Length: 431
Ligand code: MLT
Ligand code: ZN
Image (cartoon, rainbow, N blue to C red):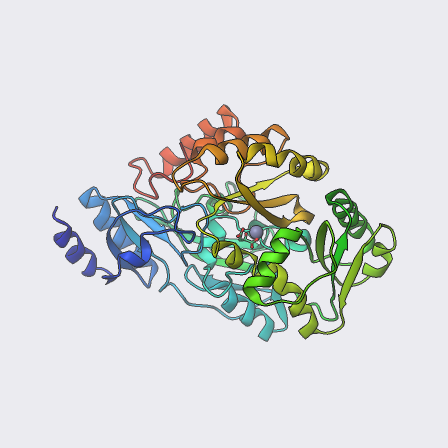
């Protein structure tokens, strides 16, 4: 079928967009693909109709949310882009949860929750653009995983359209429901390969006030890890434990115009309900800047929040998002230079979760030598090659480092059962 006819068939069942360029590249600029058309359905029936047109024409579909993903999981490959942005309905807060369409931004969920006296347990810097649907299918993490778990832990129910156009819907959010396979949780982390998530019921968390925030300089990465261990044990309601290194701090200061910090070998940004002072007394600390109000806490968070943007001013980074057993964080960082092939890396991350973001600068976008070396290093230390960004296209060749042949076969069997023709997100997640 000529592309013009395909676009006409799609426009008969859903809104479409001519802005193909806006959906063809991943956020980092590392990967660009080709979209045949962009469909913008605004109801679950329209999503099913878009899939029906594509199925009938033998054209495959790439599902795309806010476009803030970092593993090229929503970059088209001669596919129709199904944008979830118009699935933007939000229901009322009821019994500590709400239903949000896949295209609702994280910020909107947070705002709705806070207005009702609650909070949403997931937060990360791209909150204004990232969508609920994208965060669910990548099982996104962010800065509050130490307190609330990843997105998976917030998902109480899912509505999704399967490749054959059927709709699975469990949005009631019953506290107990032991009636078989949890199809909603199966969609979490599926990266759009098993169905198009159209809406989710999200658990909300109590809204905390009077949080303590501190940016603590320490003499070594080992001390940073020891500090986080002490804080986990002693501080009440730990909400965030983020690692920054001096090179990253210098960069973010330059880009964001932030004041200098006392020189240290590593910095840990901590947020807790109480007990930080007690925990800080247990370890050697070079310096600690403590926020006394919300405005000063925001100033401390800026060193962490602006990091991704600051790194992207240096070029197209190879973003390697690994997690490690807590005790291996120091050894991993010590061994990392040997895996970089002489390139530089900016490392930061969610130290409380054992999750480091290794941003390598220098290699050509298509050169995967350094990706291979760093991911193998993490896997050899018992870590994961994809902690919170997902697998997408980038990490697919290394999935076997984190998943056994039996697991990969089971994943493939699930994919084949739900999407036998490979309609959804080809090239993503599974080898
Ligand atoms: C973050 O923690 O800021 C995000 O995962 C984004 C990134 O890794 O750059
Ligand atoms: Zn992160």
